[in-house]
Image 1 (cartoon, rainbow, N blue to C red):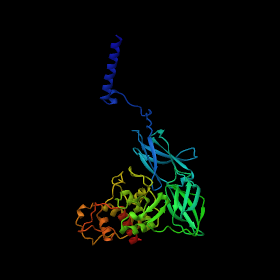
Image 2 (tube, one colour):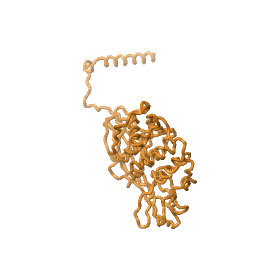
Image 3 (cartoon, helix red, strand yellow):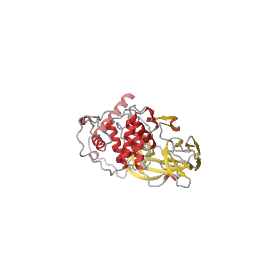
Image 4 (cartoon, rainbow, N blue to C red):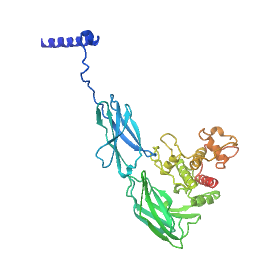
Amino acid sequence: MKKKRIIKLLSCIMMITFLMGSAPLYSWGLTLDPNLPVLTLPPAAPSALTAKLDSNAAVKLSWSDNSFNESGFVLQRRVLGATTYVDIISLQAGTTTYTDQLSNDFSAFGKVFYRVQAINSKGSAYSNEVSLDMSQPKGPTGLAVTYDNKAVHLIWNSTSPDLTDYFKILRKVDGGNYETLGTTKEKHYTDMTVSPGIYYYMVEAVGYFGGGMSEAQGVAVPKEAVTPPTTTTTTDPKAGGNLNFSSASDWAESEIQEAYALGLTTETILNQFNRNITREEFCEIAVKLYEALSGKEALPAIENPFTDTTNTMALKAFELGIIKGTSDTTFSPNSPITRQEICVMIYRTLKADNSSLNMDTSGVSAFSDESSIASWAIDAVKYANKNSIMKGTGNNNINPLGNTTREQAIVLIKRTFENFD
């Protein structure tokens, strides 16, 4: 009996709900009181907040929008040592990214913290907190400078490894001024360009927000020391042994030695000279060419777009616009580089050095194999041919898909330097 009464009651409730839903309230003699409070639910809190620095001193923030009823978002920031957050901007509903362009020197505070909140007439809980360390790296310690085997060797300790992108080596001779000698990612460096005199060195740890300098250390180079000769074999302690140029072809040996003396080579390619050079290897000497032509130090991109290389020189080339990868996320570092890719890298290197350089290609006759040249490479190939950087292979062919040996690449870079220096 009790069960039947419950079923009957439920049926009445369902009937009343249907009738009220199918006709306006006033038709039933009912009205809503406008003074009754409206129930507003707070939005769900954002989550997965992340923060990354880009190359323009800006913080890229992103988060997940978990609410359906927000009217907007409020982004907040605080610095290390502050107890409260400060609102930096209000954003529209549905927004999930924001770039905070840094206009103040936050490096004095060390760290900057961010969080975001969804709002309507109420506020959600805050997202997770993220932080970025914006400190300047501290100067290296324990710098030791020694002279041995006609070279000066430096070694030091890094005090801020997480904040240091690379080290800059500075040198002055006797009473002169300090000048940048080179850069390295390692914690050691060898200066092979010394002659008799007193040398002073400092090492700067360079990071995103500046650098920290070591104390200066000096060393005396005795009179019997001479600049390393450009003979067939020379010693390079960084390479861990002798550099032997005798394996190069007769036509290339002297020019390889000249390229080495000009700083247009890398340790990697100073052997097996008849081996095909890879995309990564040529990319490295293209950066060397840029630095020699411009007299400027190339800096690596802050964010690595590639998943298949972490090579610092590749990141420098990407930052300069010399390379763009074989896809949005790959560089294919170990693939042999083609002749048309070489032309493109050199073309972009010259443009990076001198944006006003005349890149006219008029007057270049069509190649017999021009149909094999990629559309993105045709201007660079013609420019290289017009300026005697890349010559043909006979019968008016340019062989755009052919490969190049290490010795050919070194000589090509060296001659390009001489033509455009």
